[in-house]
Image 1 (tube, one colour):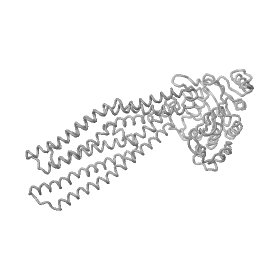
Image 2 (cartoon, rainbow, N blue to C red):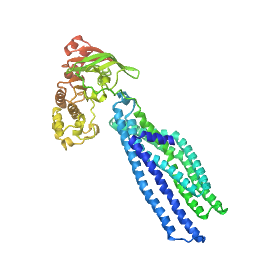
Image 3 (cartoon, rainbow, N blue to C red):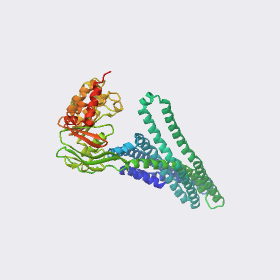
Image 4 (tube, rainbow, N blue to C red):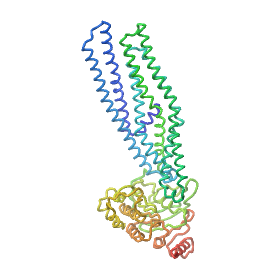
Length: 582
């Protein structure tokens, strides 16, 4: 149990950890003030019993003393409870928020290959379900267990002031209770991992179902996909019920031991009174303490079984945070020029080689077109040049310095990207454009939109630049999304532009505006483009033809056409496709 508590506290950052430590210290005072009720009752009971027995008169001084202790207990317990709860709540939710941000920052610097191996559902589950459990449930579990133990220990200490024999009985009951609690947590360990994994699978499957709903409907697979989703949900239900069923028998035994401890305190107290070794007043106080001890044991024990889920949740978050990032601790370098060179670079996914011994030089302010069959490594090469991945062998340089020498942020300042599949955030159009420069003014946003040929259609939207678009830009056409993406790149104003088939899925009506936007974006820039359309390739300063990860041809359009190789066949096939009519 304590190893889980320590792991949870270490998981929190320093500020929030201190809030939890502070709440535990305040909790000690809270337990003390709660235990003062025993003293208040003892004063009152002793006064009443001595008056009944004729030993001493019952005066108002006794009443005022008992009332004073009770009021001090009430005020102290209320104040400390409020402070303790506020610190726990702030620590929990701020830990959740800071860890989500920390995970997001960490993901920025992971190799792109990580996202190929791990589904969106897993990452989403960790940043939503897992963080929610840690920020809400885990905080309550940890602090309830801690407070329950503190209350129990202080009540036993207070009992010891009245009778050490009863304190021993209470201690034995507490030890047995904790032993059963340990058995329950060990029993839950086997199913808690399954429960957390099942929660993750539900998120993954729901995301997959929603994201692929168009394909599911188009291929009439609604029933099958619904069945798979329902099966995942049913397994999740079974996992949650199974975890509860594992707890119930031992939880009931735990409750029985807590009650039995209270009964034992009563029986021994009455026995000691009857044999004359305990005063009646103390006996009455012990009878009341037996109920208070039961409540304290229940507070700590009822939540302890969930500590294993806390342990797993921390492990899942740490699993992402402990993934090795790319070496990002380089220098903040401003390159003297923006020449890009790849020197005999290799790269492989697992054991499958994608880029094989590629050497390439891209002078500053020139346009390089990369063409080749599907799967030839075009996108991967662009990712290596911009250090989305690190090469397995060879080197990539920008301005004569290895890209690994740059800090990641200073390197990314030099690159802007326009991808075939544009992702826009669920936010206003203005904020989506300002993603390339968050500090930009509205006037700068409008200027960038005009250059990207998207100002006119934005103005026609219901709220203009303040129109909130759907996640992924679903409420806009493909061409409109592309032009907003270009406006975003114009706003960033990086010296190197990478266009990954930016015009591949654009309809003829939007193509003219899109080409004008690209011309504006790429003016006086170093341009690397992946393209299938002849008009976007033929005027490039150099054309690089990839096949099976190797450069098989390189040169200008006219030279490559004369060579009659892969590029010439590519051009012929495109001409045939353009000339084909229905």
